[in-house]
Amino acid sequence: MTNPHGLLAWNSRQRVLHPHEDTAPAAELAVADSWLVEDGRVRALDLHFDRFSRSCTQHAGAAPAEVAAFLTAVREALPARGRWFPRIELTGGAGAQLQLALRLRPAPPPGGPARLWVYEGPDPRAHPRIKGPDLQLLAAVREGAVRAGCDEALLLGPDGELREGAYSSVLWWHGGVLCAPPAEAQVLPGVTRQLLLDLARAEGRTVRLAPARLGDLDGAEVWITSALHGIRPVTGRIGAAAVPAPAHRFAAWNARLAALARPVR
Image 1 (cartoon, rainbow, N blue to C red):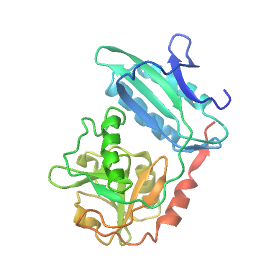
Image 2: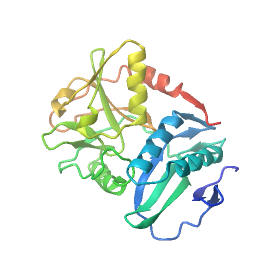
Image 3: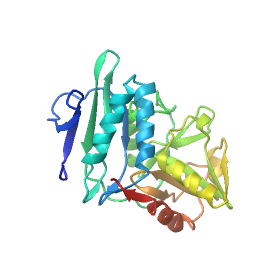
């Protein structure tokens, strides 16, 4: 398949992806995953596939063999040239027929330094550990950040504990220690987050996964991370409680992250 663009629906009977006219009303998004492809290279595609497969089978009740066959076809369909941000989707559920699909989208420009806006309401997500069902809600949350002149919305728990961004994970450095909220803080198992934690451990760095509050980011080098943008250093005041330190480590670690990209096939 040569650089297709648009929606490719999975035909379970023929075991193929085929172009689909995306004109019907949007079905309920049960699970989704996305990653950056640059000239046929991607970081940790298998981790994205594993996360998607687990969510499809455990959360939505999809057949494991069906999801595995779909993901094999997705790998073959990914473009070998250009900069893309594909999304795999499982729609339906709650009595509606499940449908797997690949949405091929050109990637937006890389993001630079980011300013965080603290979302003041309760965390709106119904499924914080699953990517997909809350994406529409999170888009509205991030719109609030954009209206405030910022780039990303930071979600907090009911007691003010740090969770993550609407579309990103949050990590920070205190001295030589790389810190992040624990899974118990109701954060998505971010692939880029996991890669960075693994890189730090492989270098013998201390990694601390522990509950934290906004004040714990004061004077720390703060990053938001995602598959699309890699690492974005956080600049400017975060709410009224924290002023991040300059991003001294960002360039070197972003280069380490970029070096993990491998050919899709």
